Length: 212
Image 1: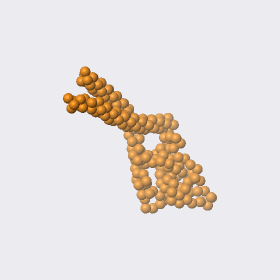
Image 2 (image 1 turned 180 degrees about the vertical axis):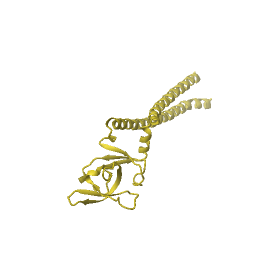
Image 3 (image 1 turned 90 degrees about the horizontal axis):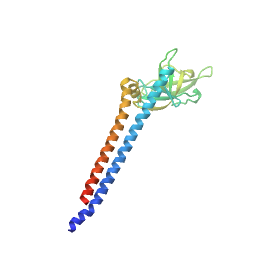
Image 4 (image 1 turned 120 degrees about the vertical axis):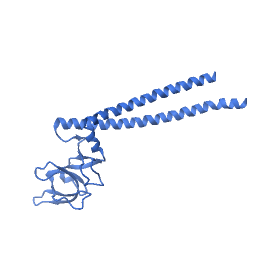
């Protein structure tokens, strides 16, 4: 009889530990789900905002005062590689220092843009600044110095692979995916919550029967 009594007395402790463990796991899943959902929503907002701005104004996407450019080559490897997204803030050419990474326009009427590191700053005969640039992965400097009027801005941030994601997100398939993923996560989380509540109710009902 003592053994039976001991087993009955220990059962509430076991149930409490199981509930506590389950509650902790639920909280962990909820936090992870919220973080993933928040990240997807933030990226979706950036994509929608930048795409709308580009289509309405015809200008380069811009957020928080920074232009967004997708890197097309690996000339700045290992600092950042192709398919990265660089955020470029317009600055006064006088503020640019050696070692800064800048985005600049091509020679003449070329619309091409390059993002390279400043390795030397010179002053022309007329007293204007010009910048000698070089890709981190290149062995030689760029062939032409960059005049101050060609500078678009200075790189403030580079995010690996975000450029590739942005390219995909601006397609029909990408937009559909961005809508399905958050919706799917929400549905799965709600299903998990409902199943957990049903199991908990079933255990409590079984426990009350056993106590009777």
